[in-house]
Amino acid sequence: MTRASLEKQPHEVATMFDDVAERYDLTNDVLSLGQARLWRKAVAKAVDARPAQKVLDLAAGTATSSQPFAQAGAYVVPCDFSLGMLAVGKKRHPWMPFTAGDGTKLPFKDDTFDAVTISFGLRNIQDTGAALRELYRVTKPGGRVVICEFSHATWGPFRTVYEEYLMRALPPVARAVSSNPDAYVYLAESIRSWPDQPALAALLQDAGWAKVAWRNLTGGVVALHRGFKQV
Image 1 (cartoon, rainbow, N blue to C red):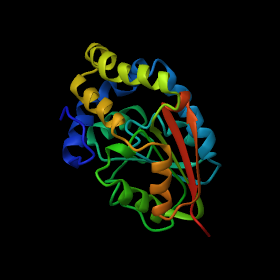
Image 2: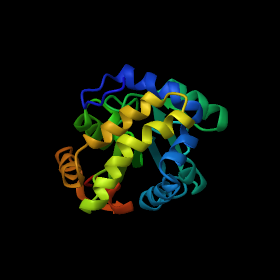
Image 3: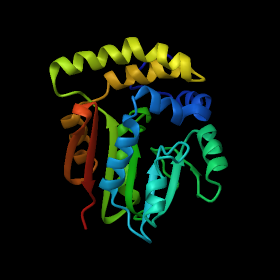
Image 4: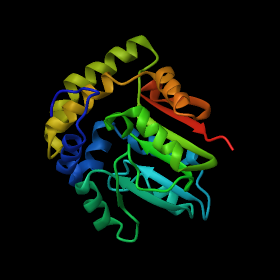
């Protein structure tokens, strides 16, 4: 899979992530020019995990994104549909309850989690609306969702430079550091075809989430959306 489409076949995307699992975190740090770590900190602050709370980290990959929640004392479940990612994560964090799961059919009961979050994974799920409804279903009344996803830069000149980087600079960098550079060509194109900030907010509202808001990170390269499940 080297061409992007929002009509993604789950097994193809899962296989793609299996192939890049071993060096995924390193590659992300390089390709994001170090911004990925700042984005993770912003997510952790927005989720605001507390001791004894239950947090679902969907599309958790190797569970790098899950660590801040665990360190805050929450019970965090890293969930992903890439068995390769889960295997690498389990080697690194054997004590964590890694769970294989499809974002459109989560293997959890209704009203289970105090907070649900997904970082850079929503656009890789075949049915965005179904995923947002599933996250809503497994969240407790009064609970919250935090979505961190690539978005659309808000300043025109910067947006042009950013898109040039995605399509011209990213592939050769990926070839140098990734075990599957074609996967990153797909990822770059999927970013360009992803809905902008207001459109994703509308999808959240359509799925039932209330008090939906977002804020831009790195000039809109990434957006942090949040919503709440009504009591």
